[in-house]
Length: 326
Image 1 (cartoon, rainbow, N blue to C red):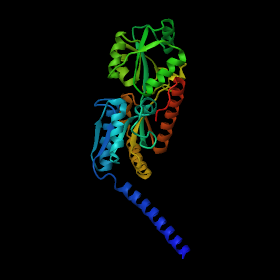
Image 2 (cartoon, rainbow, N blue to C red):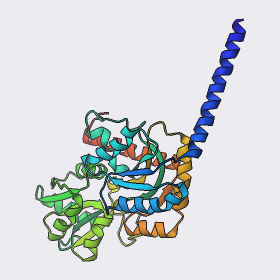
Image 3 (cartoon, helix red, strand yellow):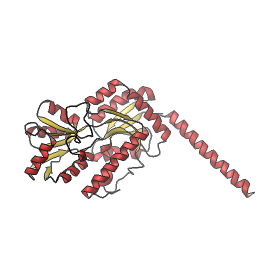
Image 4 (cartoon, rainbow, N blue to C red):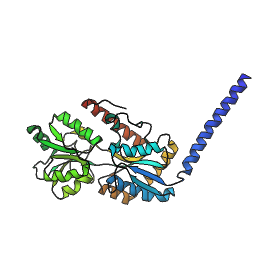
């Protein structure tokens, strides 16, 4: 009798598991059943906003539902991430650079979400090109020139840097080079190139898209791209590795993130759709024009890229004596 009961129980469990797989597959096939919202950590006309709208326009006919781009800037990205996490809805997705969230566990007490479980990678579309600029009138032509000037004038030079990942990387660089320079805080970092061009600050590290117009006018000199290699959209500018400062590499990945418990089958299906859109030459060219060279990745490759950036953050945090808070 006991054997029969155990056998019946095993059959029931197997049936339940099988039904769960069927339900997941059906759910993935039926998605989306209503409009899809892409939640961004930036406002209109930002590089990420342009990318989201490019994708949304082309995903809408594939998905058969409207794709709504919704910017929620502020709070160091916590507002946008929290909107997606708290909704617990697979029709509400986060879209933005990895720099928005990879540093959160080290800078925010009582973080309201789990960085590993609540952010499930779907697909990446581009790399955010971060650049280092100095005043065009400063006479500095290289990153080494800035380092030497800073060392010769301790406490007299100032800088601006995008909050989060870029700031952590730059602080690690400052510690490594033993520089005494001051940070100038900006509510909107995209206004800092104006001060840089006027010489009110001596260095800015932020998106190449923000520095590029000022560099084209000659008011700013971009001395390095914060990547392992030169950028295809600005091949004349050396990478920080070429410049001799490999610890200044900062290449956030722009991508789409789903909520906790979003089935892997659904994430892979969405990734396939995104990668199909990324084959469009117009999409790739328009992303490159905004300082976001295309680097499409599916679920697994995107997850590996995020893992690598989290490990980089952990190494720098250790150097800076920062403990993980979550």
